[in-house]
Amino acid sequence: MSASFSINPNRPLVTPQNRRQPFEELGYELRETLGEGEFGKVKLAIHKATGNKVAIKVFKRARLDDAEKQNKLRREIAILSAVIHKSIVRLFEVLETDELVGLVIEYASGGELFDYILNNKYLSEDEAGRLFAQLIDGVNYLHQKCVVHRDLKLENLLLSESKNLVIIDFGFANQFPDPSTLATPAPEAPFSDPLRAQSIPDRHFLMATSCGSPCYAAPELVVADGYVGTCADVWSCGVILFAMLAGYLPFDDDPENPHGDNITLLYKYILSEPTPLHMPPHLSADAQDLLRSMLVPDPDRRATMKEVMEHKWLAAY
Image (tube, rainbow, N blue to C red; front, side, top):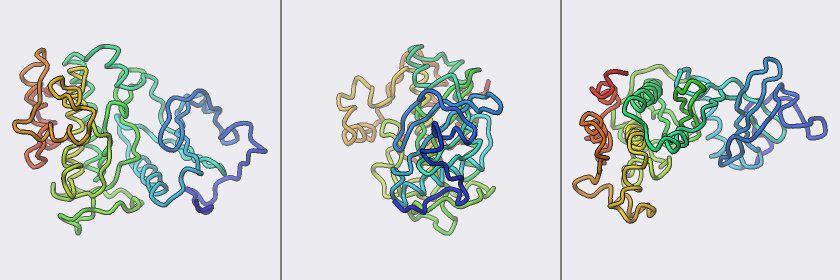
C-alpha cells in the first residue's frame, strides 16, 4: 500500500517502541475483543480520562492496501461524522498510529440483536414493533440525509443497555448519486465531504455495486444492472422484521426451499411466482400485511419507506 495513506496528515507518530499497547498514548486502554471484521477487530476500550466504555473499530493499515478499501473507510468516517441519531452508532473520534486506524464508537452493551432473538426463539409483536420502529426511524433518517446503508442485517444491529436498537457497520454505506446521474449506474466514488441536507432523489437513481449479505440482499442486487439503494434497504428491513417475528429468515431458512444455501437457486426461488413467502401461523394479519408489502421482489411494487412508517402495524410505536 501507499505509505502516504492517512485519514489525518498530522496524525501523531506512535511507534511500537514507545507504546505498550495500541492507542494507549492516545487516551484509551484496550480490553477484550468484541468482534472481528474484514480489516481488523472491534475492541472494548476504556477512555482513561473519563472511565467511560467505548468500542474501537481497529483497522490495520497493512490491509488497507488499495484505493477501494481506503475510500470505503473514508466513506464510513465521513458518514458517521455527519449523522446524529439515537438509533445510529455514534462516532466519537478517529485515532491513528503508524500501523492502525481506530474508529472510537459508542459501546452497545446489550450485544447483537441476532443473539437476542436466538436466546428468545423469536420476539413478541410488541417487542419487535418497538425495535423495528427504531430501525425504520434510523434508516429513514439516513435516507433523508441521502445515505443508504446497504448492509442491514441482524448482526449489524446492536442493543444498548436499555435494550434500544443501534445500527452499526457503515462500511458499505454510500451517498445517493448526484441528480445528474438519473437512471444510470452510480460509480463507487469517494464519499463527498459534507452530507448535503436535501430531499430524497427520485426512486430511479441507480447504484451499481452489489453490497450486503446475500440472505438480506434485495433480488435486484443480483439480477439487475443497477438498483435503487433506498428500495434495497427496505427489503433488508423486511427480512429483519420477519426474522424478529419468526426466529428464522424468510427464504433461505424456508423448509419448502431445499436450496437455501445455494445463492443462485435461492434467488430463483425468491423470484418465482407467486412470491414464496410463508408466514408463521402466530403472526397477526397486520404484521403479515406489512411483511408482504416489504418483501416484494419487484422494487417498483415494493413499499416505500414512507409507506412502511405509516403502516397500521406500527401505529402504536
